[in-house]
Image 1 (cartoon, rainbow over the protein chains, first blue to last red):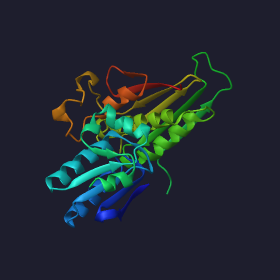
Image 2 (image 1 turned 180 degrees about the vertical axis):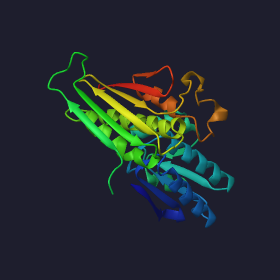
Image 3 (image 1 turned 30 degrees about the horizontal axis):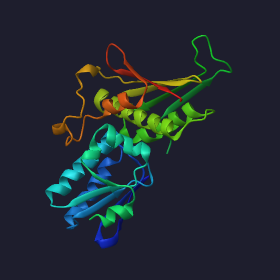
Image 4 (image 1 turned 180 degrees about the horizontal axis):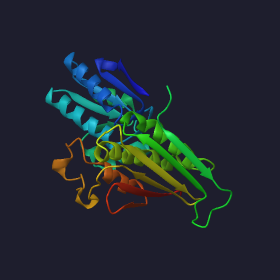
Length: 111
Length: 154
């Protein structure tokens, strides 16, 4: 379980969520995104292709980093949500707040 | 490192008079770093011996994580001297999971739905809402420090 960071096409910062995004590790994601913003990165993708589940604290962390990125003049995309993960965003209407694509490749092409 | 979690599983060959074939109990300290392991343990025992869809497995993991998080953070205020008890009663048709903390309790009817447009930007307030949406029934005890979630297996 954890997060891995890489560079995608066009210099986009890609964060892969391996395992769970929950109350116990959400701060790690927030710190990772803040560090990227501090380095001047402004285009970020969080990919959930290898994610088991997300709890409401994890959703809240995504809302927080979305705000920070927006305030810094950047853009955030989410990708790789399976049907169960996507249902969490739909139930909470967070699918209206985030730019979500099916695959990371589609997300990278959309910046 | 020894896990601080205390798991007990009691199985009976046939449902007892109360209809409980298997009882799983888990006791964990008020430490959010224990939640993931607790969720995996309880989920594994709740689904053992049953055909479960990925959606049932997913929902069980999410609601367990939510209930444990609420119990540890809001109920026990992350006081390491306080414990959270999980009690899962398993029958062929359903899973009944009760999560109890040592806090003073809360009024679940006072928690607003987090769907108003002005609330979408809030980082908190979705836990109980998600539980209600993902399980078939939710009950609280009178004190409000114990939640019971019922999930049908199909």
